[in-house]
Image (cartoon, rainbow, N blue to C red; front, side):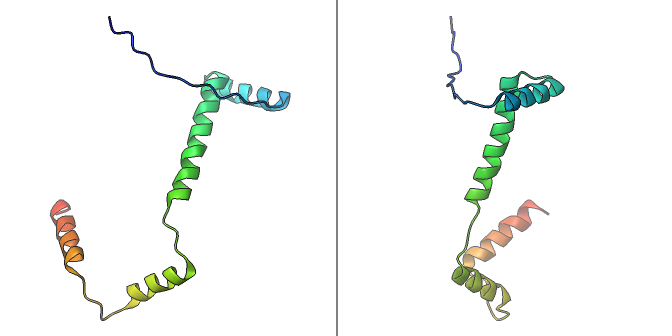
Length: 93
């Protein structure tokens, strides 16, 4: 018999009575337990933080080079860019 279970871990937090009451009230409004509500809210915020963190960030020097490359009217696409454009066109025709 297969009795596999999802591995769970515990995160202990301490919060004020007011914070606990607020979380419990919000959870009730959503039809969730306080734990379910807290996990959903914390996970949503964590994903947003990581998404922001993982975005490409350019130094001022690199940003300037990037803009100059975009504005270069004499620039010619290289083979990799041409191939990428062809793949894009084939996918979205």
